[in-house]
Length: 284
Image (tube, rainbow, N blue to C red):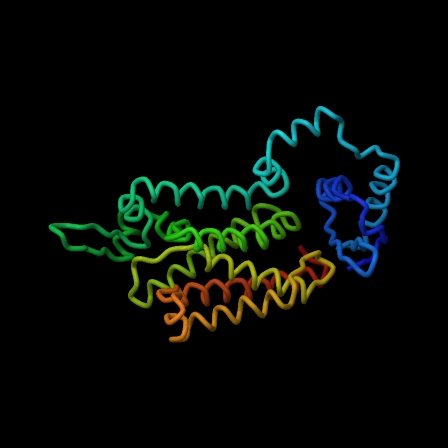
């Protein structure tokens, strides 16, 4: 990371940061004592960043009244879609599926499980992966990631999806985020299905993939602009290990898709190692 400038802690730099992201200039802001420090991901962009800073100092980046009013009226959701539309869309899709599950129950679940399931004469019939592929129901390979079985399950998964996903989208574009999410969803679902489980769901496998990816990108290519607090990495890995133990059930955290978590994390680490190495060598 390249240290670009220091600013008073109380100074509002929202307009400046919005302009930097709009010009695809990766950056990070940290607080050190009584100042906030603006770091640049790629030193080669410092001239362009300096030009934007000059405009910001002159007030040329300030929003016009009509624009500010429109942005405030659009609310937080509109702002999220503007800054990281694909990550926000993924969150919105999961929330929509959660609402549909509340309204239509088992019909939605049956449509999104990894393999076809149905209740016939009071008995649950379960298909196979071959049935899904043979019938063209390709969406089932990733759709379990969209299902969440409780508010806490949904909220925590969406928190991490937004935290990590918007970094990937802002720094490397929406295509990288979607490819990583789809691959991670498939691998994590397949890993969980391999244990003999068919009724599972959640975005946590994708979340762990994004964690592994962002972490290795930050370590292998610090100039890339990716950042994750080390304590957050420790917490999420410790949580994954904890849910694998019998103690998790004693605290009400049983029936966790541990294999999905592990499968997603491995995807993120593999892709992050590869992409981080390319970024460190200046390749794209």
